[in-house]
Length: 316
Image 1 (cartoon, helix red, strand yellow):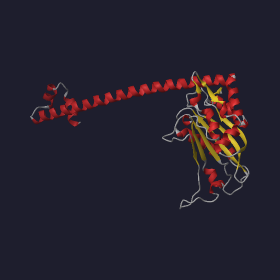
Image 2 (cartoon, helix red, strand yellow):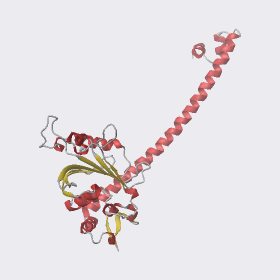
Image 3 (cartoon, helix red, strand yellow):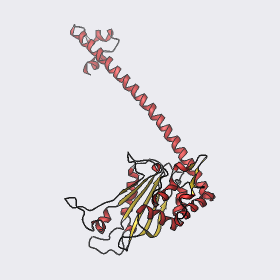
Image 4 (cartoon, helix red, strand yellow):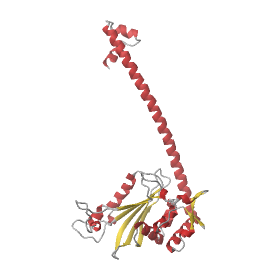
C-alpha cells in the first residue's frame, strides 16, 4: 500500500523531521552504524529564501554514541544537506567555523596542550552526484598509521588526533533507487526521488510494507505524513520552489549571456587577427616603397595616411 508523505528533500520538511529527537536518533544511528543513545540539536541554519545564495541546510547535533566496549562517546555531528551542486569551499568554511568554535571544546579536558575538541563527524546529504562514484553512501574514515602503513593501536581515539581530523559520511540522493537491503536503506528510502508523486513534487509515495514491523521507521513515516498536513511546512516548500525557480532562471540567463559573450569575444579576436594581418601587409608595402627611394610624405599621400601614421606604422 502506498502512503503519501511530505518530501524530505525540502529543507523545511527535513527540519520538521529531524526536530523529533526519536527520529534524529533513528537516522543518525543508521548512518553511523552504531546506536545513538542520546542526541541534542544544537543549532540549525535554514536558508533565507530572499537571499541570492545556494540552499545549504545545516544542523549541529551533540550525540552520545554506544561504543563496542559498551561505553558511550560524545561526538559532534555536522549534518549538511544541499539540493544543488555547490563548491566544496562552502562546506570547508562551515567546518572551519566548527573547528574554531569554543563551544565545541571538551570543557573537562585538562592538558598542557589545551582543551581538546569534541570528535566530529560530517554528514553530507547531496541532491546531486559527485564525480564517478556510483555508491549511494560513502564512508570516509581517518586512521592513524605508522611509516610502514600499519594501523596504530588506539590512534583513532587519541584526543589530539580527533581534534584535528574527522570522519565523513556522504549520501548521494540521486543514487537511491529503491534498493532496500538493510536498516540504512530503509531509512534513506524516504529520500528516494524516484518515488516522488508525478503531479506534486512536494509528495513522495512510500510503500508502507517496507516499514511495517519497525516501530522507529513507522514513526518516521508518520512524522512525514504530519509534515504533509502542516500548513507552515507546505508554505515553506512553496517558498523553496519559488526560490529555486528564480535560481534556475538566473542561471539560464547567465548561461545565455556567457554564450553570447563567448561568441562576441571570438568575433572580436577574429577581427583583431584580420586587422593585425592587414597592418603587417601595409607595413611591408611601405618598407618596399622606402627601399625604392620614395619619401615618407609621398608614401603617406599614396596610401591616404598622414606622415605620422606612416612613421608609427614603421615603428610597430
